[in-house]
Length: 135
Length: 109
Image 1 (cartoon, helix red, strand yellow):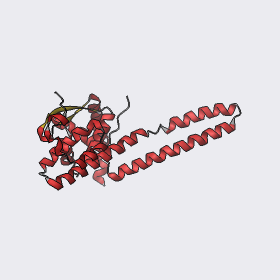
Image 2 (cartoon, chains in turn brown, green):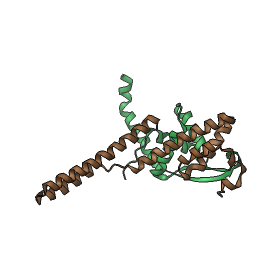
Image 3 (spheres, chains in turn blue, green):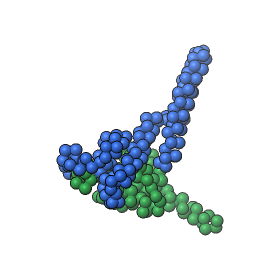
Image 4 (tube, helix red, strand yellow):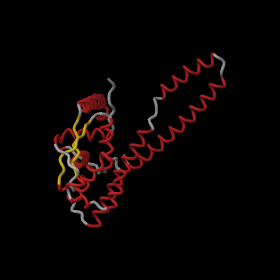
């Protein structure tokens, strides 16, 4: 199936209001055009016109864009399995204790603990936002 | 190989893609999920689920032809991968097994 450039092959491209095109920037570029196509088709099925059509397109586009952005954000903060982190720390810590560098171990634990807390906080925040938004 | 855990919405979307076959793109998938689940599901929820399923390697997508009624924009068609079918089968088995054990409990309740 041939994929054509929608921007140049059809004059209907302009049928998407400017505000909706701006909101569509929230959607990852790979999915943007097909999503806008779905919205245009659905708006036509619902027989929406004028300001109502613009408002409907904008709200749908904003919701999908926000959802996909949050999903992408969550993908950036992947928590490593806690069991593996604890096992790794235990192995490394035991080795350092044997060599008498207790201060180094405590500093490392404090550092790792602060990073883990930060990551966990972001994970919880994004998770809560997504749950609240109904995803 | 580890079992792929499916969320509620991911499960519904996979079933919708399976049922729609060659016609599985955004709008019919959303309609199918709403009709089958009897819930008012938002478009964003379905698109996020589709994204997750693609990231998990359970579905694949490709662009179709551009159509004038969509302002020249192509449809993105989704298709189950063998791993997606396997995940659905495993999920079904798990629920059937659970229900076999709880059927009598539910009847008594």
